[in-house]
Amino acid sequence: MIYPITVYGEPLLRKVAKPIEKDYPKLDQLVKDMFETMYHSDGVGLAAPQIGLSVRMFVIDASAAAEEEPELDGFKKAFINPEILELKGDEWVMNEGCLSLPEIREDVARPEFVKIKYLDENLDEQIEEYGGFAARVIQHEYDHLEGKLLIDYLSPLKKRMLKSRLTNISKGKVKTSYRIIIPGTKK
Ligand code: NI
Image (cartoon, rainbow, N blue to C red; front, side):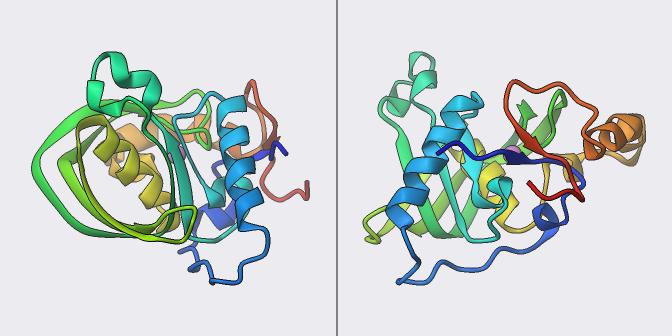
């Protein structure tokens, strides 16, 4: 099932998401649906709050970037109840986008490496370290679970410059190739 995407202005995107309990119903199906929704909307990552669920999980498929970073070959993972254990390395800047901020792309500086503990889709605990693009996407998606968005990293001036576009997004006045939930409406 392909879910519509929550966008800027949706209060749930600003909430700290709740951990997933062991007996969470139909978790397998949720993982599948999140990948399907992500592929449908051409995203590299998708966090549960972006489909209107305030729970701690996100999915990433960065395998398309394997041409530039061979270690990303086959990088397709679900991260359940992730916990960032360590961020290290120099910050580097990359132009980021977000399905919840359609048509907005901004430079964001993030540390190069991340060490993360999480449950995989079989609920087995993993502790892994990532660098480069994978570390960036992980940090971006993890932010969604903390109620954070990439615009929070921008200078006050940059934010002011985006204000009218953000207002438009929150009213649903934005073009997307995927279905969105207009804030304040029920899907
Ligand atoms: Ni995002």
